[in-house]
Amino acid sequence: LRKFLNQNKVSRDLASRITHYVEFVGEYRHKRVHATKVDFLSFLSGPLHIELQVELYMPALVRHPCFRQINQTFRSLMREICASAISGNVNYAKSDVIFRQGTKAMQMLFLIVGSMAYRFRSVDPR
Image 1 (cartoon, rainbow, N blue to C red):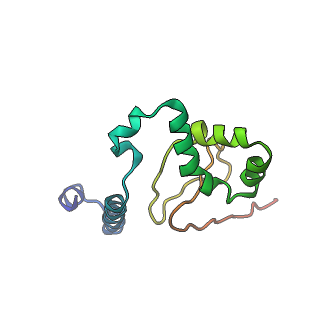
Image 2: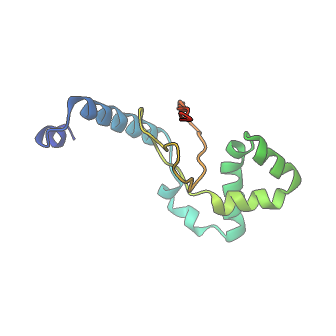
Image 3: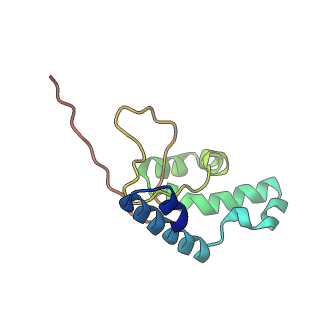
């Protein structure tokens, strides 16, 4: 990685960020087994797969008041959200911009591990 970054004259700042991120993700992935790495999960029946998805994703979703209310009122809808609306894990590095003001929202993200800062710039009314 370092050889590639050096050969392509990537700035020290960006190279440092990339290197730290790759090291962090490598450590994290080494500690946790991702579902895509467990071949036997592909053998699950539809209902068992849904139950697994619900147990995996429900705890993170019900932290949000909206989803907590959905879960209390429409449990079957919440199961459907866990089974079909979740698209997996996405990793972001320090200083990554996840979205910008004025960009159309195409998805909803939930922070499971780590922290993030949300910066809002007020628009000048002139």
